[in-house]
Length: 270
Ligand code: NI
Image (tube, rainbow, N blue to C red; front, side, top):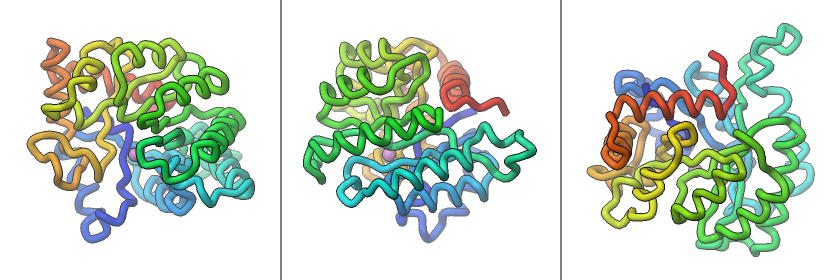
């Protein structure tokens, strides 16, 4: 079974056929997904999606492109929702309900788009790492063209076995080693199938088998042969095939190990 650790099914690109796409996933071998919020608005839509589908879990947080308008009241709200709906409450009779929040994210730094000044991005990255610590959940990290600052901030604020995921890992094998040493898992997706995805391919072969995760980041980054089209979790078989070939193992072995890794990282016991 495939565990898609990073999706955005609340995106408007699914507004015409969202339920049909989600309903088709189990036939493609996709057993679980985590929908990842990227703005305060998508915190609500992500939570709603997770609460209305058994196989969907939620990560709540604000992407570095969206931090420009954040306030401390937003941090309070994020903390409150994460505490109230944390997955760990699912079995607690005093806190009934559909408790699905498994991480804080996606949070981080994006120096490629530079939508907000870098000092502002850093400030809200650190504040959201504080939130993750306060609610005791792992983090989902977005980092683009910002390896050193991301590493320095995580080293200071968020380390330890299973403390989080560096998603859509786009740096070198050497940099992967640094994040692995801090305790992070590495998530890879469509880029591992791209002709120009040399770094991702090297990382896919390098990451220890207990630290690798599969992700789509859908609707973005569809793998070959669907590159450029809207992505969905059914495409992960292409990614699993690519990683299997790079590691010299079977697709089933890739699916099994990344499934177990995702359950461990997101602390799922069902
Ligand atoms: Ni994403």
